[in-house]
Length: 405
Image 1 (cartoon, rainbow, N blue to C red):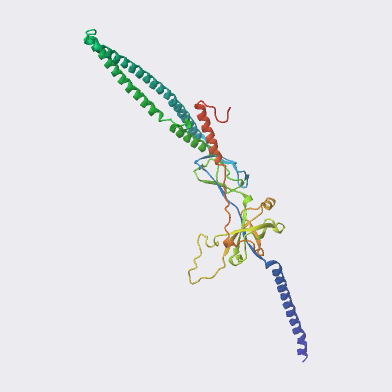
Image 2: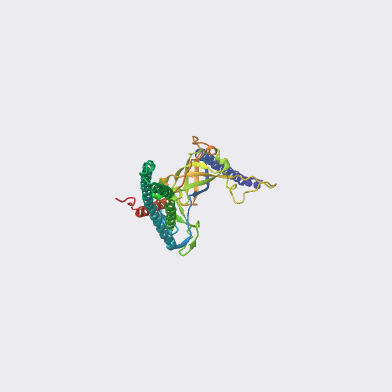
C-alpha cells in the first residue's frame, strides 16, 4: 500500500512534463503560424538564386602572332581599350601596296580624261579638213560647169575640160576619205569616253577596285589591335604573348558588371501569384544581412532547368516519380544599388518576392521588351579607312584632301 502511494508523485511528474512539452510545442506552432500570417503569407522565397551577367567574348578578327597582351584577369577596362596586339609587319606591307595601287589607278583615270582632250582635238581637226575639202569640191564642180558650155564654141579645149573633171574627182575622193577619217575619230573618242563618261573619278571601275582593296588592307591593319567591345571586367583570359592565333579564336571575356541580374529558381507551385513588376528583396551571402537590394520581377524563363539540360530527364518509364520542377525567374536590380554594393557573377542570393502586389501581368502572359546589345568600337575602323582612301584620291587627283583649306 505504501509502495502504491509512493509511485503517484512520479507519475504526476511525468504527466506534468508531458503537459509542459505539449504546451511548448503548441506555443512554437502558434508563434510560427503568427509569423507566417504576418510575414510569409504574402511572399514567395527561395535561396536557389544566382547572379548572372552578359559574358562578352573577345575574339580575333584575323590570324596573327600575339606581340602584346595589355589586360589581365580581374582588370577593369573601357569600351575600345586595346586588350591584345598582333604583329603588324605583313599587314602593313599589304596596306602600302594597296596605297600605291590606288595612287596609280587615280593617275591612270586622270590620264583618261586628258586623252579625251586629245581625241576631241583630233575630231575637230578632221571636221575642219572635211569642211575644206567640201569647199574645194564645190569650187571644182563650179569650174567644170562653167567650162562645159564653152567647149562647143571652141573657147575651151577638151584637155582643159578633162583636167577640170579630174580635179573634181580628186576632191570628191579626198572628201570621202576625210569623212571616213572623221567618223573613225568620233568612234574612237566615243569608245574612250565609255570608260569614264558620267562617272566621277572615285567611280571609275579601276579606282573603285583599288579603293576597296585599300579599305580591306586598312581594316586588316586596324584589327591588329583587338579592343574591348564593352566596358567591364576581364575574365577567362587564355591568350599569351608569342601565341599564333586564328580568326575567330576566343582570347578572353569581358563582363559588364553594371548589367548583372539575378536568376531565381522558384518551384512551379510558387509562380501562381507572381506578376511582372512585383517588388523583390534580395540578400547576398557576400554582403550579409546588412545589405538588402530592392529589385523587381522582370520575366520568367521559357522552361525548367531540366528541360534545357544536356541530358534531359526521361520520365517515360515504370519507375517514374514526380519531382517538383523549378523555373528560372529573372529579377532586375537597381543600378545605383549595384554601384554602392557591387556583385559578381555566380554569387548566391536569397530572394523574397512580395506577391501581394497583383497589378502586373502574369509571368506566362508577359512578353519582355527587347534589350539589344551593341558596340560601336568596330565601326570606327571603317570610317578611318574611308578617310584615308579619300585623302589618297584627292592627293593624286590634284584636289585638296577633305578637311583642308
